[in-house]
Amino acid sequence: MTDGAQLPEVTLTPAPDSGADAAAKIAIPDPAPLLALIDAFRSSKVMFVAVSLGLFDSLERELSSAKKLAAELQLQSEPLERLLDACVGLGLLRKQDGIYKNEPVASTYLRRSTPNTLAGYILYSDKVLFQLWAHLENSIRQGGPQWKQAFHQDGGIFDHFFRTDKDMQTFLQGMHGFGTLSSPLVVSAFDLSRFKTFVDLGGATGHLAIAACERYPGLNAVIFDLPRVIDAVQNQISLCSVASRIELKKGDFFGQEQLPEADLFGLGRILHDWPDEKVSGLLRGINQRLPSRGGILLAEKLLNEDKTGPIAAQLQSLNMLVCTEGKERTLGEFRALLESAGFTEVRGCATGAPLDAIFAVKP
Image 1: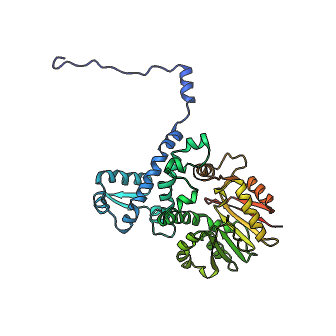
Image 2: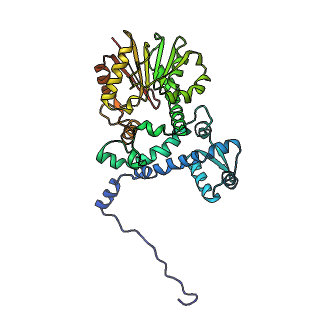
Image 3: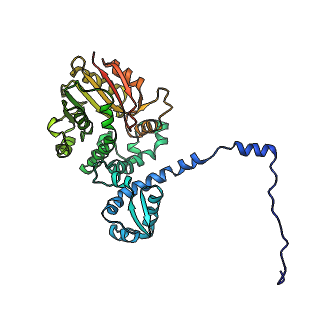
């Protein structure tokens, strides 16, 4: 090209759409839901790693830059900045002039020392469930939990959760944080004021029993769980506001020892761990320990009767597939199990919390 030469002026116009092409373009669905799902596991992993590294605990103590926080936690500064910025994008942190600060939701739920912390459940999701879900396809093809495929170990579900004291504490605190979101609404779903003694089977940290005693001043509770679990949680329970009305008992509800007697039994996220035959046996055992007009209260996710939702229950049922022998159930399925064990007047309540409530009585 010679100096001073001018390019001819060119106007680019798109080729006109034919009527059929235009109609086809209009009919193409929005891919946004699929793109969000592609990113979903990345978003989860960002939160998992941030909790695992203790970022939210550190930022609650002192606002910090990425460089300073990296030095404190012995991390690489530039990669950490990317992680922190992603937490800003997810609404977990805020950033101003290079300084990071926890959003209220992170201060409340993502620090390990708060009363409402979900950190234990997040760590359990990261270190255990994330690995199991990697084998979902195998579970669909062959059925059954995927512990051996993920961790190269045999054994049942709680053999893995309780392998070490640290593993057990992480699992128990994870269930506690999750349970505190639901238990107050579960015990309020039905009028339980006539009952005097409440046995919380597999109650662990006692969030269901504590919520029941707080709601009903005339109620005393017994938390029944494995010896190792009771030893691990007894100090925590002794500090709660209703500790004087809570008794701790050691045992295995699938074992040979008799269950405690009471006029109300509660099971929070217990039955979804097990297949129908085990659930039926446990419910019959509970029925035998109840007086006439005694009650049973279940805290579980309820599937719609046609199982088309809600999505949280559907995903949790898949979680049970890769993790346990159990599944999530509909109210109709719970009714069939309860009635076959001798219960009647089965009612369900969608609480709006992560767990719903089911109640039945012994005639």
